[in-house]
Image (cartoon, rainbow, N blue to C red; front, side):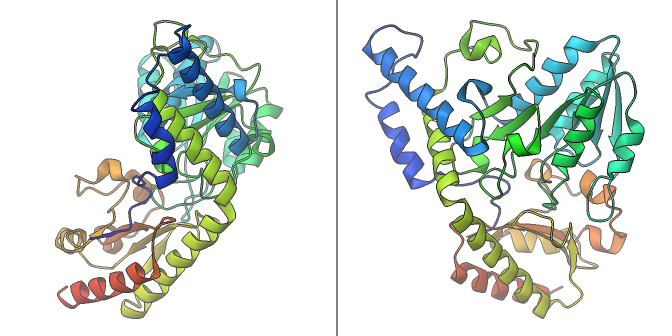
Length: 373
C-alpha cells in the first residue's frame, strides 16, 4: 500500500527513533529524581525543550510539553479563557478549525462564554475585515489555525495577531499541521500561544508542546504536581519528549529540502491526476497552502470509489478524525463545496519519505479505479 496520508500522521524518523532508544532502555529515570538516573533524564528534557524552542524561535522556558496537540489546544483555550469569565467572555475562532479547538469552544459556550465562528471564503481563508468587525469589548481570545489539516490553506496569522494585539487580545494558533512543512516563527507571527503535535512531524504519538509567550498567564486545567510549571502535571514522557526534540532539530535542519521535496511530489501527483481526470477540482488555496497537501474532488463519485481507493492507497476522505464517517466534513461545508464534488473528495498528503515511484504507481492505481466508476 502506498502511504499518502502524512497529514493524518507520520512515521517516526529513523534519527528520532535512534535518539529515543536509550530512554527506552538504560536511561529510564524520572527527571524529578535527584540521583544520576533522574539527572540524565532532566538533562534530556531540557535539551529537547531547547530543540523545540530553536525551531519556532522562542526561549526554552516558553515551551511546555504536553501529551499532544489536543492537550495543547485545550490548555491554551481553557487555560486562558478561565481567567476572564466574566467579564471578558468572548472568543473568536474560525469555522474550519480542528475539532480540538471547536469542541473546546462548544464546552466553553456551555460554561457561559460567547464564541464567534468566522466564515471562510471558497479557498478556506478567513477575512481580516470580518475579524475586525467581530471584536468586542468582551473579547479576550482569538484562536486561528496556522494551516488547515484538510485543505492545507495557510491563514494570515501575522496580520490577525496584529489586529488582536491592537485591541489588547491574546492570540493563539494551532500550528500542528504546519510545523516541519513551512517556517513557523513565533516572533515573526506575533502569537501569544502556539500548539505543536509530535506525530505530525515524524516524532511519536502522545507528545506535543505549547508555546506560551513570556508574560501570558494560564490557569491549570489538569491538577497534580509541578511538572511543566504545573500546567501539564505528571511524570514527563521522556521518551516522547526526546523524540519530539530530535524531530524539531531535524525539521529546522532540513526544512527547505523537505518542503521542496514534498511540494515536488504533491505537484507531480496533481499533474498526473489531472491528466487522467480533467474535470478534477482542487480544494483549498492554489498557492497559499501547505507544500504537501493536495485536496481534490472527483465529480459525481460515491463512497464505493473511496473504499476502492483506500484499499490500495492510504489517503483520506477528509481529516483523519472523520475517516470513519461518510458525512461531508465541516471544512468542505464551510468552503461551500458543490454537492457533485462532496463524496468524491480525497485528501492526499505527501511527506519527506514519499518517492517519485510511489507517485507514478498512485497514478496507475487511481486510473484503474476510475475506469470502473
